[in-house]
Image 1 (cartoon, rainbow, N blue to C red):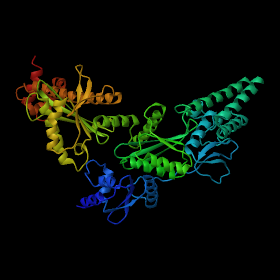
Image 2 (image 1 turned 90 degrees about the vertical axis):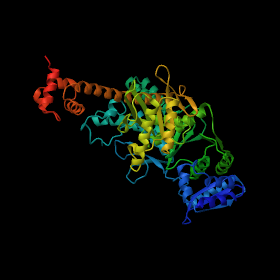
Image 3 (image 1 turned 30 degrees about the horizontal axis):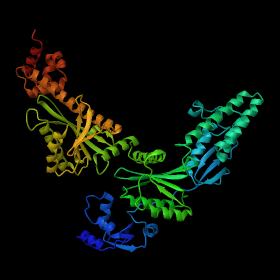
Image 4 (image 1 turned 180 degrees about the horizontal axis):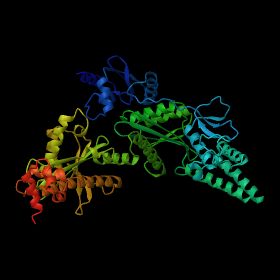
Length: 607
C-alpha cells in the first residue's frame, strides 16, 4: 500500500527542524507544514488514521509523495513555511485573504447633511473623512454619533419630505430629532451635525469638554431649556464611553486571539485593544477544524503578514509549542519585543473567554443556533471525552406498568434543540412482562437494523447519532453495548442516572459515574433531555393503556372483536361518542353490520 511506502520514507527522515511539502498524484502541492523534528512529525501522518481528524485523513489519502527542506532552526522553518504557503496556496492549509479595505466617514452634500459609514470613496460631491484602516471602529463610531446627537439614519430627503409621513420608531425611542416633522429648525439640526463631527474627529474626551463649556455658557444666559438638551448629550457621550471599556481601562494595547471548532468548521476570532478600548475585531471561518497548535502558529504568522499592525502583547487561548519562534518572528517584524502569552486566570483570562465565546457565536449563527447551545455541547463533549461535538443526540426511555403495555420512546436533539419530527415510538414485541434491560436492547437492535436499511438516505434512522443517552444506569448501558458491537456501531453511549427524588444526578458509562451537579449548563441540558424522553415515553404508554381499555370494554360486546373495536374507535374517536351514537350511525361505521350495530346500541342503552 502507498501509505506503508510513505511511512517507511518518513521514518528515514532526520530529527532536524524543517519544512515538509505534500504532493498529490498530479504533482500539485496540497499541504505545507513545519516541524521541530521532521521524522517525528511527518511519520505521524502515515501511522494509524483512527486518531486523525477528517481533514487530515482526506489529505493523507491524496498524498502521492512528499519533499522536505532541512532548516537550521525552528524559527527558520517558520519563516520558510510562511513563504511557501503564500507562494503555493495549498488546498489543506489555512489560507487568509487580505480583504480588509479602507473605510470612510461620509458627510452628504445636501443642506440637511447626514453622516454615514462607507467602504468606498465616490465622486458624488460629499465630504469624506478618512481613510481609516479599522472599519469596525469607524462603523461603530458613526452609529454612536448618530444616536448621541439624534441624527436621522433613514433615506428621507429634507426639506422635500417634510410632513409627508409620520416619524419612525427612532423618534419615539428618542434616538432621532425627526426633522421629517418639519418642526425642527435648520440651525438646531446643523448644530447637532457639527457636534457629531467634532465627536468623530476629536473623540469623546474633547467632545465632553466642549459640550460642558457650551452648557455653562447657555446656563449663564439663562437658556435653561437648551442647557438641558446639552446636558442630555453629555450624559449620552459618557454612557457610550463606559460601554466601550470592555473589561477595564487596565487592558494594555494588545490583540486577543481565540479559536473555536464544532468538528465541521473552525473560527479564529481576533479582538484588538488600544488604550483599554476594543477598537477592532475580525473573524476567520475555516472549512475544516484546526489539526493542532502548529496550525495556530501558521495562522498568526499569516495574519500579521497581511499588513496588520503588530501590538506589543498577543494573548492566546492555548499554549504554543513553538512560542519562542513565533515571538522572534513578530519581534523582528515589529522591531520591538513582542510577547505571546496564554493566561490561566484573572482579567486576561476573562478576555480570552469572551473572545472564544464570540468565535462560537460566529459558528452558531452559521448553523442557526445560539452560542449558549454551542457552549453546552462543547462542555458535554469535554466532560464525556468525545472526539467531536455531539450535534445529533438520541435519548431512550422504557415505560410500562407491571410489565403491561411495554413501550419505549426515542427523542432527538439536533444542535442543542429538540428535533420533534425525528421522535420515535416503540412497542416492545420480543417478550411479555417487565425487563427494562431486555426492552432497551430490543429497541436499540431495531434502531440499528433500520440504519442498515436506510443509511443511504442520511435521514431519520438512516442517520448515525453522535451520542446516545439512556434513561437509566450502568445496567442499561451494559445491556445495550453488545447490540452496538453486533451492528458495528461506533457510537458513544451513556446512561442518565436519577436520585431518589427522580432528579438527574450523574451520567454513567463503562468507566463509572460522572458527576454533573457542579456543571450548571450541562446539568440543565441533561435534566431537560431526561425529562423530555420520560414525558414522551410515558405519554405513549398512557395512550396504549387508554386504547387497550377502550378496546377491552368494546370487545365485551357480543359480535364485536378487535377489528370492529378499532373501527369504532377510529370512526367515533371516544367511547362517549359511541355511547351517544344512534343505530343508523353505528350501522354506517366501517366493518359494522345491522346485528353488530344493534348489539353495541343495546349494550349502551340496556335500560
